[in-house]
Image (cartoon, rainbow, N blue to C red; front, side):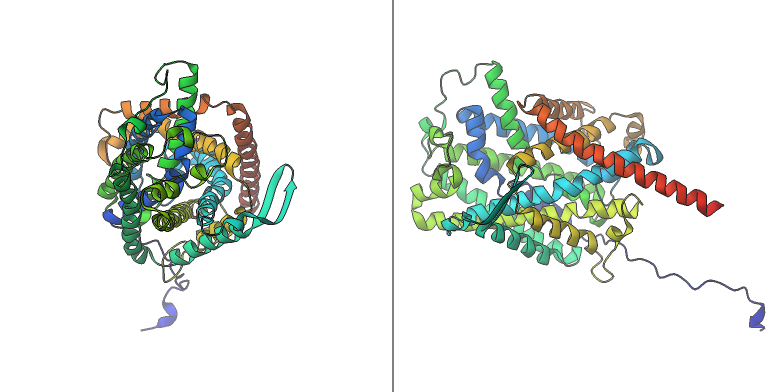
Amino acid sequence: MDVSRLPLTEPATPKQPELERGLSTLSALGLNVIGMVGIGPFVTLPLIVAAMGGPQAMLGWVLGAALSLCDGMVWSELGTTYPEAGGSYAYLKHLYGERKLGRVFSFLYAWQILFSSPLSIASGCIGFAQYVSFFAPNSAQPIFSVRLLGVPFVLSGQTLIAMGACALALAVLYRSIVAIDKIVRWLGVAVVFTLVFVIFAGFTHFDPKMAFGFPAGAWTLNSSFFMGLGAGLLVAAYDYGGYYSVCFLGAEVRDPQRTIPRAVLGSVVIVGALYLLMNVSVLGVLPWQELAQENESHARMFTIAVFMERIYGHGAAAVIVVLIAVAALCSVFALLLGQSRIPFAAARDGNFPGWFGAVHPKLRMPYHSLLWLGTITMICCIFRLQEVITALVVIRILFQFLLQGVAVLLPKHRRERRVRGYRMPFYPIPALLALSGFLFILFSRPNFHREIRTAGIILLAGLIVFGVRFFAGRNRSVNGSI
């Protein structure tokens, strides 16, 4: 055989490692639950009571669950039709046209994630640090503080604790999705146990007159009622956020056609019932007037700790603080896990620098994207985030929930849903209800215009970056063809 006559071939390029489908249905459900709970319901309960002016705050939890369930059906349809990494990034790209508006919308979504995701995760870290300060009240004293462009930067003991929480979550996540599958199940059990423990304590020492002592005019349907409901729904939307965490891991879920709808809708039902029961049980022990005070009282800062202390004493308060701190860490864990897949998906699609698209050769997870997100989150722990987070929630509603809700009504998705994926009952009514709920939250806010301006600045910057990248890429293509 004359080998000299054989055709010359290029050496085979080593195939890049891909993500692994290792997340089971039970673990996906656990991931959504821990992503939803976190520190939120334990520290925001007084905010809902104050916003709605009494025990009628329970209506905020009920309507928040209904809104999440309707939107969860949207996520379930899109997640089973396009079970890919990045979740919303992939949905916007496919549904609005991969070479048309979908290219722009998906980039802008990933762009705002660069800002909103580290800040949102950092808020969970800071909430963890603030609750841990129950044991170290002097940790809030600033070591260094400065204000630049009106934004306060603070370094304190709490800041260092928050950074440590992020670093711990990052270390636990630096492993394969198969190993994470096992961890998530136990974290979900720990979070549900914390909520059940609070509910049990409240209902065994329950005063119905206190829990249902509505003030005069509580149910009068006037402008004050709807303004309070809008503010309460915004807080509830923040607390319920996370029922879609599994959708960002669409490329790592086993049997996505079954797993995604069960995890999304099941987590909303479970957490919604637990939130409502917790709200009622706490108000049956702590007077709502105490929670609604506009000051930094102990009952507002450490609501559930004070609640347990009045029932069982200081030792029980310390135990519940530890459990809530664990729940906060679980939320940081879930957010880092899911959100790290968005820059990865954008990089694999050519919409972000290729560095973000690297997959660990052994662990088969997007380690560059994960490490970047964790590092920026630790830096963001130096901010005071309350007003910033509110503006970023508005951005998410505008460029995620509303765009997705509209997308499931488009002809392209109507054709797709006939042949594959989960199909919501009574289509398109749940999608329309979800759109109405998010629009109500937006327009009922007193600072709506200011938050829209903040969102507009971030999105305008994104359009400029997209335009620069687009024209630079086109020039390279033209020069390469000459």
